[in-house]
Length: 208
Image (cartoon, rainbow, N blue to C red; front, side):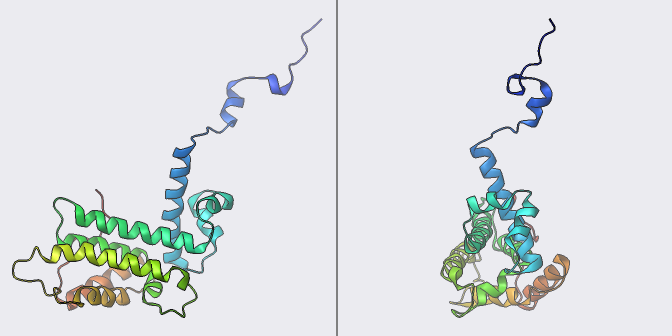
């Protein structure tokens, strides 16, 4: 009597193993979160803070369920992106060979990449995204501390050393960051820094 085919549940073979996704656990979760933050930065820069969260999930290559497991609402996504921006500025400022010009270059990169956040950072309490306003202000203070630490490196006294000049200059430059492309936003930001007489290093993310 010929052998009967084994039930599907008992079959084993390379093809079936290939169709069974690997469970990377925490590593997969960390990769998904990083992909979502990067996608949110791009989508917000292109479409503004009102962009659908589904667009962020699609750009990250994950389902909306994965997005909501990491970020329960829009405010959580926004603050995560802002946190990442500020963290890179702080890392650039803490680097062994850091200079104010170099840190400003990193800051400027984040300004032109996250142009949609300019309105948020300058909004008053009536803004409908004010749920993240207090957090944004706290992040702004962290940026100021990171930058101000390097104002002391200039023995002759930097032109932005006076009380509020530093963050006023940042606000003025961020207000100038506008345009349909990253190239145009970068060009306008650098032009604003030049008008203020402030040296800026290469505009790029912090690379460690």
